[in-house]
Image 1 (tube, rainbow, N blue to C red):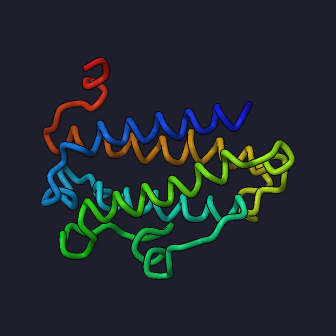
Image 2: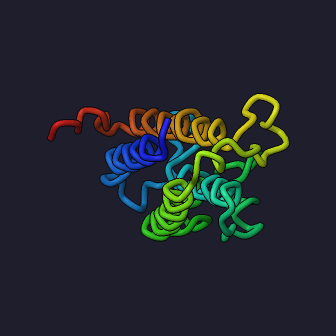
Length: 167
């Protein structure tokens, strides 16, 4: 595995997020259709918050404060109130800024950096190195949340995002 491979996946996931979210109007970002509680506004904030932690885990600076942890961290509960969340544009700005910071850290990582200990005490027994943690984050964590947005789209009566491939 190379840092280029990780960056390629990071870029693909962002393109897939665009397919999932670009046509969602800001006003619909907190809808909870058909009992689907985790709406796009919460997912964007949660993923930005998680990326912020990954940036710190790769030796970068954590930028998001305790308010982000409360609203988007593990154990937080999404609410349908649109006013309880930043605008779609602001969520995407923070998401992309944290993503850019993570890409910069990954792009500059040496093999030794990737083989370094996973800074997460909770996950280190299963994912011992930073490389393990990055793969988990990109493949499992982010992929799970993108899949949940895809399910939200279906419940919201929107076109399947993967149908946009090749257009």
